[in-house]
Length: 311
Picture (cartoon, rainbow, N blue to C red):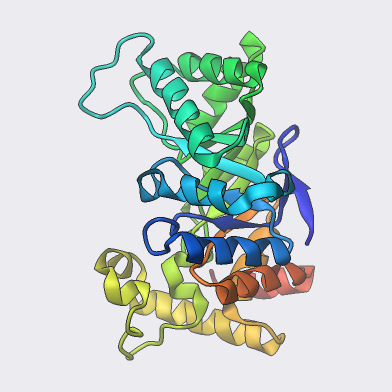
């Protein structure tokens, strides 16, 4: 599988990343290990998790499943902000980050985190406190690279400026929700990341399942599917307009011998600045389907044709 560097100085990632948010929630240890093995067999070496996934179980399952294969992967995890009911005082965010890092290292059974994300920005704490603390962790070797997640364009610009002025380790990447049905980030966030030489890692590439091809207009949701179980996700994306767009995208992909799922991931991989696309999976079969999308490189004609669909 193709690999790309995240930003100008980040880690080298497989262009498909394995989203591990299902570990410890929908999947037990054995099922999680099977998904990880399938990912490694498919050439996926970028594992994305967070301390909040499964209340820490996701990290635990990754650590238990990798065993002697730890050095074959890039582990990305994320720390949570301070509790909302905790008033900010200088040093509070630093303590939160340091505690989170130690917890993640222990659960992952590793001596370093390859890519450490600030899962959500702490709007009350100065960004200097986060960057200085993360810089200390990098200097200690406990973290190799740092990144942001769920940020605004302004927050990207401010963090880049602070890191540059103080000679601190910079955010090499940012993780954002981006897919063919949700392109809001293209207005400000994506341009800001490109301007700051911050690599981009899209998540929810399949729009919570709308871009898998499993949902059809006028039909009941498949039993046990995400939309069948979780009305929250269905309410966000199940609209007549989106069904019409998916139908057009499906026809476009099938005319070229591909699935709409492969199109959704290949389109993101064709965007400037994208290093890796995070795709979750609950079975080895889903892992292989996600990995197959990495083989399709959209041509300029393909991209022009997609623009013609008025996306």
